[in-house]
Each structure stands twice: as C-alpha cells, then as structure tokens.
Length: 95
Image (tube, rainbow, N blue to C red; front, side, top):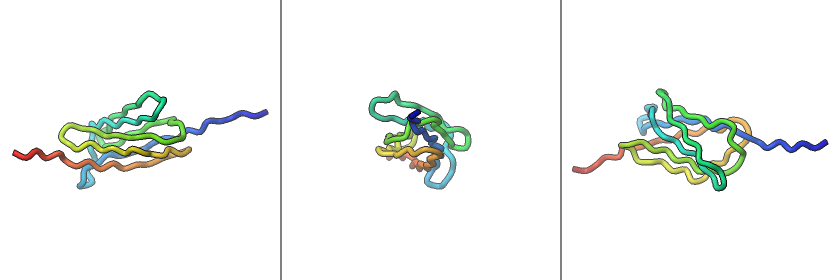
C-alpha cells in the first residue's frame, strides 16, 4: 500500500515601500517552467498569498505603475507556510 503524496506549500507575502508602508494593488506573478503563471493582487494591507503551490523552484515578480518592478528569480517553496517580504522603490522620473 504505497501512496505518494505530492507536497504543497503556501506563499504568504507582503509588498511594502522602502519606508515599510504596505502597497495595495501590486500585481504579483508566480511562475515556473511547465506551469501556468499565477497572479494575485495585494490587498489594502499589501498582502498576497498563493495557496497549494507544488513544492519546488519558482520565480516571483511584483509590478505596479510608478514603482520599479521586483524580480525574485529563484524562490524555493517548501511544504507548509513560506513567508516573503518584497520591497518596492518609487520609479522617479527626472524632468
């Protein structure tokens, strides 16, 4: 009687400014080779979550108009809770 359970984890994150202020409305994309990308948008507290993610290596990207995008090319998801904090800087345009 051998049943193989494929491990999953959850990614719980927050996106904030360099002044530690939460950023609502940020599009966070989780992607991995061979899987459809998944998108979440941060809530009023700057929080996002990806539930039931297969254990493995992923890339994470956060984008929002007016801010520099954040790329995390290698996020390792383990079973259980995986917490991450992303910090975004304002994209200042020189006149």
